[in-house]
Image (tube, rainbow over all chains, first blue to last red; front, side):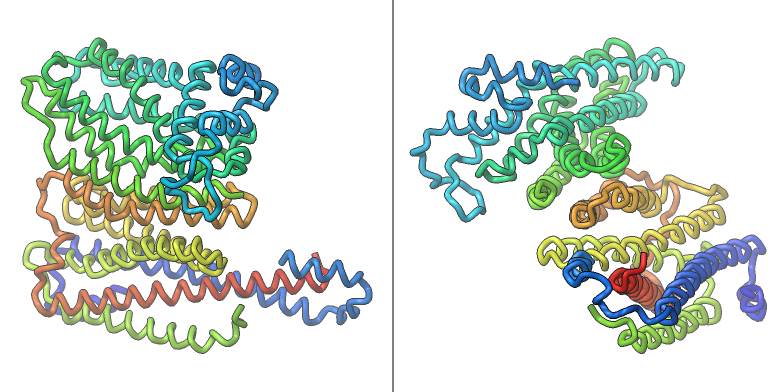
Length: 78
Length: 282
Length: 231
């Protein structure tokens, strides 16, 4: 794809080695960026799945199930 | 490991003989020692401490007391310095075989010397806070009403002392084993360069030792953190020593390398002073 | 702590701005900036490599500044910001070293050269900050982890300029220095460079914002699920 950008440049294609390295550098940058975005996307789907899980589980019983002081302590440690 | 000899160290010491029963001679022995040395009526007028309560002892006295304890412990247990020195000598032998040379001079000599000093220093850095971490020395120190930077100063001076002893062994060994040209004329310059570099190594070493000692894999993390940080010291030290160790006695160390070392010492000395407290609290 | 959804619009604005800026920057690089006389087309890497390096170095130093804020205020949000900034700078650092190496290979035929002081000192800084995460993961107690990491970030942040000074002093100029030539660039090149710099900086800020939001969301999610009694 980078080649598609570079080839229309009639006046900017001197030695063949130069353009190869430039392309490599920009491709490396793009690949790193892409890897990062993919990792973020995977994390996001995981978070969304967890959120969905929390929402669609049977509505958790009101806090009488657990002793109230334990819940308060949980909130503090978090 | 070293618990037995440590409790021996407090006994012969007159002022802390009362603390002979104290664990490992680090915490309560130190506190007793400090309070013996400074009469309780001594006003805290000159104390640079930033704590709000009355500090009964001057920081300088605290530093001296701590330093004395460090050096005494090291003298009795001999766990750092002989190891460091032996390591340096062995490294010179390894270099002889690795480089396949009988004599080095100039850049190569400076390189061999500084790499060896650096790695031997790492051994000392690894051991610096281990006793305190394992035997409650930190807690004991925190309980004492003294300025916390005193521990930094004392540990830096102690590490500096170990490095000096290391160099007293390593530099003659180097001159004997590997160095081509004779040291005679270059010695004062070399001493100056090593002194400046030592301060930098001591400051960074103490800081990283304190950082690494209460983590997992502390022996690995210490050198891993310290080596990149010490690269400017190596640059300054090696570039400055290289003309001193040159074959034809080229000349003195370049001023800019000494300036670099001095700047490094100053900057990191100040930073260490500023952040050390945060490492101690718990 | 702010609810993630309230920062989504600003994330979207940032992302759009970043994409636009980077599009403009690359357009300028390939269609506007003239070919440099000595280096030829290879010099175009300069517009990618140098902004990445500058932005990541500023990131490292800002991480140190945020660490100072954390130690002063004891607010763990500063520690989170510091961690994300340093982590992102490290990722950018990988790109810096790779693009620098490619440039070295193109210019001098070797994948690494010691005569380029900025690249060499960058390697040292990179090696230092690569220990940041192992350090954090070696401490279990979260409060102590944050505190020790902040101390490290401050020391390392102060180290960055000193290191550059030291390496620059020690490098002998056998090769003509290409990376340092950003001060005397002709007009169009300077404009392109500045636009690229702005685009990369914007990219950095955007990615950090995403990372921060993701981390905060995960923390909130964890706390909610714990309150509800799960896990």
